[in-house]
Image (cartoon, rainbow, N blue to C red; front, side, top):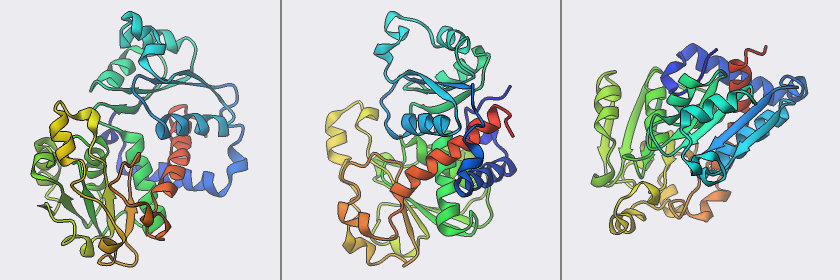
Length: 304
């Protein structure tokens, strides 16, 4: 039995196979409608989510399976003080696979150690979000045709943005990747990513506060929101939340084939005028998320 807690638990070959499987599902959806018949996915979401939870549920339903679970901690026995390990043991009696989101780093790992079924980390605090990373990789592959030889700009909250940390870790394993890290000085990429991934793997990168001056060299622009829920101080959040807003004027300096990505939800860091730009692919990114989660469920349940 295998779980997925961290994107590094998947080899590059496995990531590539998952992407290929997702693309096959997109091309031949009717071939997969009964693959998980009789199987149940439990979605244990201790933290609010729209896209991740619903995409897991849609993925399982489209594979012919069923879904049970909860969408907030207060509607579970966690409100009575039940531990994550006990919840994992209990839910293992009812489901064949678990997707868990939790505000505390490491909670899905604890669940995976105690569950008797595979556990998928659907986001743990500011730490990891491997299925969003798989979604992002599939998006880049579909939109750019490759996962190598790309200049990738990540912009906004690089300190607390778990999607950014996982994406940098995953893309750093491909050839010819370089990063432009765009953020306020207070929200720079943390040392464990800068030193442990970029420096350790000798991946070219630059850090800047200047989106306008950087956008013209990018193949991919990955925007993030400044996350109120990660701040201890409301004043700091209000001061930093509008640090970067992508507008049509800024897009005039971008390459014609640059793509704009965002893990969503957006607040106001991407102008709604950008939605009609063919380079905006964040809503297609949402769709890709369902297909990569279908592929992952099949892999962890060992269904061909």
